[in-house]
Image 1 (cartoon, rainbow, N blue to C red):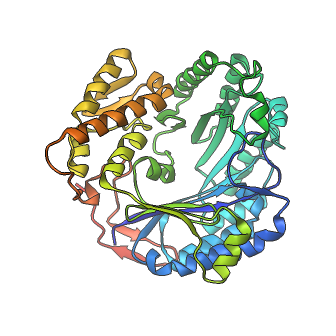
Image 2: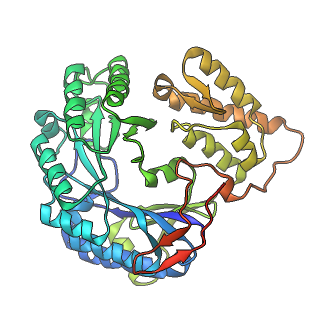
Image 3: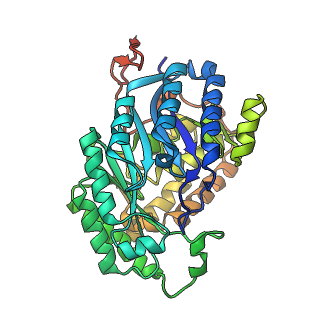
Amino acid sequence: MDKRVGIYIHIPFCASKCAYCNFYSLIGSDKLMTPYCDAVISHIEEYSSQLDGVLIDTVYFGGGTPGHFGTGRLVSILNALKKNGHVLLDSEVTVEINPGGITKEELVKLRRAGFNRLSIGVQCANDGMLKNLGRTHTFADAEETVSFARQAGFENISVDIIYGLPSQDKDSWAETIAKTASLKAEHISCYGLKIEEGTQLYVFKDSPFLPDDDVQADMYLYAVEMLARFGYRQYEISNFSRRGYESKHNLKYWLGEEYIGFGAAAHSYIGKCRYSFIEDVEKYIERVSQGQVVVEYSEKMSDFENAGEYLMFRLRTTHGISEEEYYDIYRLKMDYVLELLRKYEEEGWALFKDGRWRFTPTGFMLSNSLIGELLDAQTRQRTQISKPWQTESAEEDSQMTLFNKRPLTQGLFGGRRLVGSQEPT
């Protein structure tokens, strides 16, 4: 049993709606939290036969605001996973929380239950900007929450921050970087603000109060430089960590590995199939309780589509892509892609090192358009090859990851152990 998957649990409940949020979440629906918890647990139990054949090495509770869901409910869902699946003792188990939204006692309960990683939505060090974003905490709350987490025994903490906010300038962004670094978290996610239709901040679209593209580019490059000085290594477009503290769960998305989601609006990728559940809490509860289908969308991925995702997702990381690895997995050459990458290298957007191509920080800023061009080049090459598309892919263990070392003996929750898992050569 060497196949590993991640588990994602979507908790779509919030105490309030942030002005920039475009994720599926609910406010004022706390009465649904208990029946939703029961439905997620029932859904996990229904999947027990599928979970029995895999090892679970990451679990991620996202939202919404999982911290608002209640410690007891979070622990109940994690316990259901332990009961119905093979959750490794050293599995990375993450839960998202907001500063000031959880007590030290609750953090202690989470840590004792097996949660070992926190993702804290700090977003900004300026209390006025936080208020304008609809955030109910202050930066002092963030400092206190990190302190409580350390006292509770958490040794792996991530914080989120955002640049490009209305009225944010370079000085206020520099202050956010410095204050965030002072929290001494193991991981920092640094996102550029996206103005999405349907959010409260949409009124600022094309507004002079938003930093322009040049200013946002300067903010991003400043973050890359300063976080490196503070000891945070960039390993993905928006993610930085101290060595060994990369988000193992999120790396599954970027490295094309498999994961299973539970909950309304949750997505999964398993057996070369992508599918998602209905984006409606009440319908999700009803259908799970009645044993009805909750899948809203599904798609069987072709080998060529997976090859495209290899380029699209792995070029988000500093691990990048390899011509040899690409051919081993998909049996396809990438001559046209390499031709473009060499041009990007001349522009300072890409870098070739140790047999792998990756984007530079400047290239990361342009990655959406650059990856689009690379995918077009991939399609052109496919249409011009003389032999049919190869459908057989390499064995899964030929895929390289940043976390490819596996101990020979695995421990599971519940005292169970598995012996004989092979470490790749």
